[in-house]
Image (cartoon, rainbow over all chains, first blue to last red; front, side, top):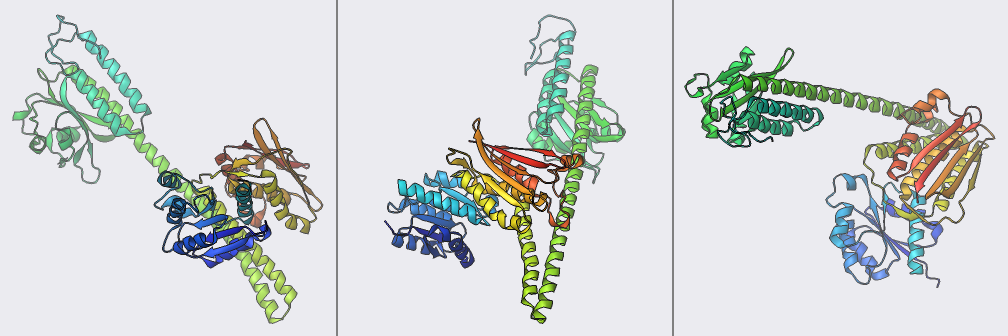
Amino acid sequence: MSDAPKVLIADDEQACIDFVRESLTDLDCDVLGAMDGERALHVARESKPDVIILDVQMPKKSGFEVFVDLKADDALAKVPVIMLTAVTARIGLKFSAKDMGEYTGAEPEAYIDKPIEPIVLRQTVKRLLKAAASA
Amino acid sequence: MPTTKAKESRGRAAPVDGGVGRYVPAHVRAEDELDAVQRISQALAGELDLNRVLAAVLRVVDGVVGAEGASVLLIDPDTGGMSFHVAAGPGSDRALTVPLPPGAGICGHVARTGKPLIVNDAASDSRLYRAVDENTGVRTRNVLCVPIRTGERLWGVLELINKTGGGFDPDDLRLAQVVAAQFGLAFANAHLHREIVGKERMAAIGQTVSGLAHCIKNILNGIRSGSAVIDRSLRAEDHAAVADGWQVVRRNNEMLGALVLDMLSLARDAKPHPFPTDVNDLAEQVCGLMKERATERGIEVAFSPADGLDDVTLDPTHFYRSLLNLVSNAIDACGEGGRAAVRVGRGRGRVTVSIADNGAGISKENRRKLFTEFFTTKGGRGTGLGLPVTRKLVAEMGGEIRFHSVEGRGTRFVIALPL
């Protein structure tokens, strides 16, 4: 099978999307970008990515809301999700990670802090792709 | 609470647990008192929620003395008046809302004179501040009031009202004074504690701000000088020199980023997010990242992975930052031609990473300061936050960090994390 694995990054900053694409170069995957929550869902439904990376704060739908919708969609519920968290997520944002687990019955597979360390992102995506491939 | 014994002497009715009209013999009363005072002492000594303890103590005192209500009133240093701070007994909630103007009431009188007072016919005493009764709906028949003081300072008063089956007597006064003395100590202690905490916090803030300012100042200097080189070189169209200037600016940008990250790591409550991680791979990547800086200075970075190590569930970002700090330190410690060795190991339910260098080692006085914020031996180039941050991150991963150093020979740091 030679379809390159697809990774969707949803973030309202183009710089971050470029950065993620740059960081994952060595993994030979197709990096798709979406700059708001609704677009992210649209791209996910159309392209069926293998890993989804969600920023929390986005226009139209937040990362949390996108996560909830993903889990409610049978076709996408099993796609592993990496949640990008910034300091604000820990201090003031409405939903905490714990709330999410209680709310949806599921939690993102991984959380990565911003600013993103490329090596950590690469490792995490690599592992999630490997786990999905062997499932 | 001890039970009463019927038919014994003294003829004084003092209810226990709300009972009315039982006779309590002198020695039982004395035991009650001693027991109560001991419990009060212990409670006040240990408890940080002073108000809760005060309320509980007041209920105890009511029980022993046989009073209907008890309260503590504190003096407001700004107005000189008093207000109910804690109160027990019927109507106590409403009493809490009634302030006493300076000098008002039997309490005000006691506060002014500094002498205790028993008024067994309060209804006809002109000093009684009637607004309190009007608010609580409780008719004050008799009052015992003692000042709460430590040395020169008068904090307020302890007041008992409406003793059942008679008036307040000298025994009651004695107990109230002992309890009031305890309260005084508790207030003085709390006051001192607040002052100390306040001072410590200010000192810590001051230290952090000055440490930060120092780092930022150094970084700014670097950026300015690099920028000056770039400006000059652009004018002279000397591209090689532009590249040199840019290196300086870039390096200082990275330091600024690292400083911010380190401050954030130290300041916030960074709950780790564990994830199954290939520790060998991550460690090797850190070494790879650092190799460029090392090679520039003729330093070798050697890496050996652990055999048969599966993914370890830990926060990869925490692990990465910890390792980055330690490897970076090791390289900085090495002189020209030195060697840094990173080795991953496993054993006894733990994964270990050891980072060793053959640099100058850590002197005895520096050892004590090693994990102190802003302590650095790198002059302007170090933020002094690497080790405190690493220690915090390692602790958050449930692990430990140790080091061993021989002056003139080198240093080894070891991180041990649970498998």
